[in-house]
Image (cartoon, rainbow, N blue to C red; front, side):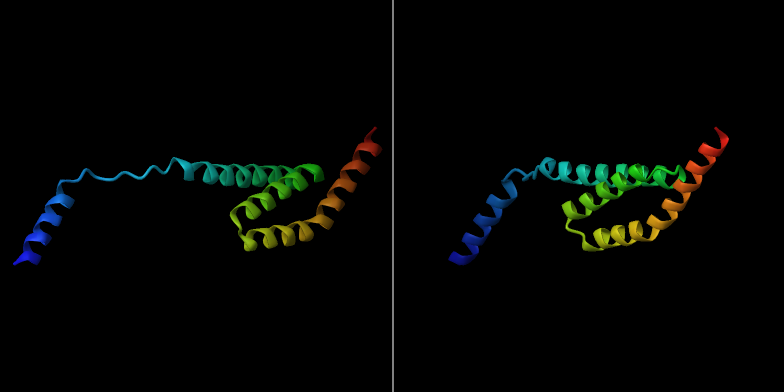
Length: 106
């Protein structure tokens, strides 16, 4: 009988307690930082690929690698390094062709 009374009293206390709220504001800043690094890096890379500007592409790649390191995501970091290594010769050829066209036109 005593156990039943104690259980009922404990349940009454739990039910009458105010709900607990957990503030998640501290977790939004890292998520926004990751999204900003990744988004800005992707935009700079796209600009560097479509316009022959290797500096923008490299800065974008560095931002994406920083986002991967910040998120502790080895797949993103290694994938970004492989992508830069694969696109490096193509961007070098594009930049050289653009310079040749500029010099021959002038």
